[in-house]
Length: 297
Image 1 (cartoon, rainbow, N blue to C red):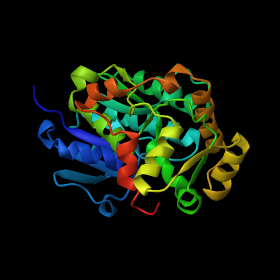
Image 2 (cartoon, rainbow, N blue to C red):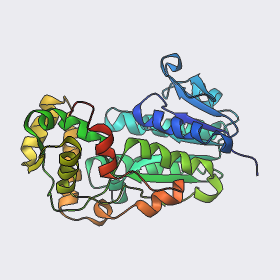
Image 3 (cartoon, helix red, strand yellow):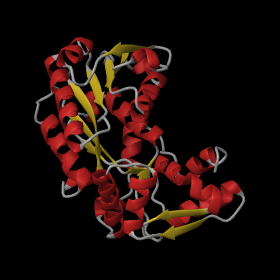
Image 4 (cartoon, rainbow, N blue to C red):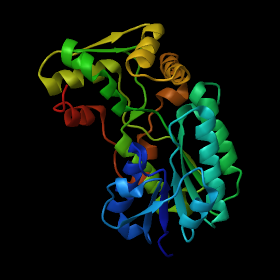
């Protein structure tokens, strides 16, 4: 069986770049790799990857760029729930029109029931894209919150040696690194016949926030404490300090509430699913913290 030609739609953001990185690292498994974005000249691409100018808002550009492609990863853009849904679904329709046979679709844990801010958003995306009838199906890859979000706590860790979040520090929950998100999506694209039509829930090994604070303590050589805060304080930080839209901050709180309630899809281990997609183990929280701790914490 000939290797598939691959493309990433939305290749300029952190997740898109991670997918491209892992496709390029396994270039021998693909018959060409395209990275689609509005400004490919501004994106540094690995050797063997072709940058192609194509906007998610232009069906004509997407269809032209995706001609001859067998498998595509569509990375939902930042923006309002409506914008993310509309651009992702429009990109999938353009891929279908271009003859693409398989989609590796980024989604989130909460899409399993669609009752939260992000859950509703991504369930609509999942339903629309899987309903388009791709020849080799859609691989839905549902991810938990990113470990990389700890960068938002850099100042409090650096100045106070504290991490402030509304999560119960004793609950073991699902997280994953952005780099491993890219690896999982690239793994799905490498074998559309195996992974098409399936839903995966990859994650790093489960850990508590107490575990995370201990990892920072070990990496930094000083005690770092996790402090649980009220939801309202977290929303004030997300909207005020980080400038996050209120709807998005409420979506983050939904995630913490689901973890605190012990909802199965928020606390189940996803290491086996990650192995199924990539053939290796995911990065652990301890490994991730050791890698980033020297960078300003």
